[in-house]
Image 1 (cartoon, rainbow, N blue to C red):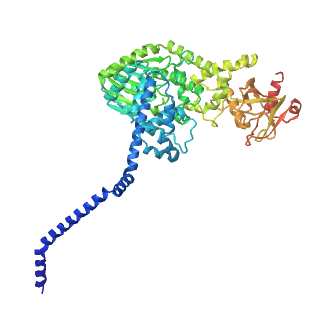
Image 2: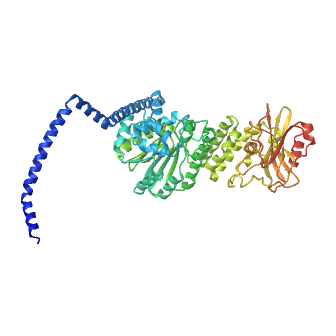
Image 3: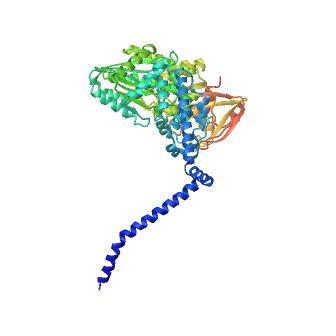
Length: 620
């Protein structure tokens, strides 16, 4: 039954090869004909037009984009070459070309429209132009949804662009090497011989850990450290403590804390002229006058901490203070091992947030750099003596100069009050608080000198309660300033205008319904001159001019205040306005205000404190 079927299949298989061959021949002939037709069509006028249109549609945008990108890259390279020349010639980096390129950099427009996600589409050259231009021209820009933390990512990408790295490194090296040609040669050699390049986004401990690893393999090492700006970190001191058996000598280079005699701290004020978003959060204060307090205290604290930890160590640790300026380089150098960590940062982006770095192990290069740095330090630095008397002398001179510099500013108490919370948060250790107390006591000699003579003779300086020695700083609203006798420290103000005085009605017990003056308690860590500014801002919404101290002394008010004390050490100020200020009462404590003359004031139901203060000052 299946035999015929197999016979047919067998016969078909016999003709399969000839049929396939014939098919291939026919297809080849058709392909030749089609090719000739297409060739004629392509070479015709219409065919040429259609062909050009097809190519343009398919590849035109790509070709145009490449051309545009090439032109852009050439412009950027020319820009950075010009800025490098400016830097080596010691000219400013601000110029019209940088401003134009920054305002038209594609990254800026993408940030405005797409936020941080736009960074992923940016090239290193775009990021380099943005990082460099933003510090000069970013103050007035409105960038919607701009996240300051993305600056790290932008700076990290910028550091991938060689012309940007060359500029930053050359700008830093020109401080220690004045000849432009030698700076260029040294930059090229560092880029060529660096074994590791630390990224901007690297963990801050990466460099410390690599340094400690090298110290572990050394014996009788000599270490030179040029700190970032003003301090020696606790982490670094821990490294020295763990590896002091491997180190024979340490030289630490930092800024001079003598703010009037030397200009190095003032030279760092450029860091506060960049856009606020550039200033690393929690690292410095945006008011350079108050930030100088932080810098001076940090320097003195670093020196004291190092001497305390290594005073009896076999390791010889010495300090060298820079009188005029920081070199713009963060340096860790093991001179015997021929090992160098170099972080350039001479631009206005001087914070660690924007600093990439190099690790160099080429002995000849390290020795040459060591000699250059040594020559510069011999001219710019001043060795700090090792005995206690010299350290004490530096501390006293630094405190005096810092206090005098603050007294030379307008309204020092008001400025300190505005930034006091952040200032305390940046200076949490006991030694720093003691230095603060000494600084403010010197300030008090100037502030209190405007008070009546009997006040200066009768009472210790009002600043003595600012930072009580040996006591912890308590956060606002968690504690009050007390005298040794347990009296609360209180402040108040006679606010006067056109012969009348401001009085306010109390809402809370125990003085509910009685008339008083704007007043309050000093919080722990506040001096009265700062506290009165804060209280007036909180209670009546007024930021006064510098108050004048007119009375201070303890008063027994006859009944406990809402915090439980009957006795208060009062600091009373007088503030005069030429026209009535705009008052906004604090609803939780005050309900009504009046401007009254002496006659009306005498008829009011007043708090015991106001009654006593009026009596004490009746002769004023």
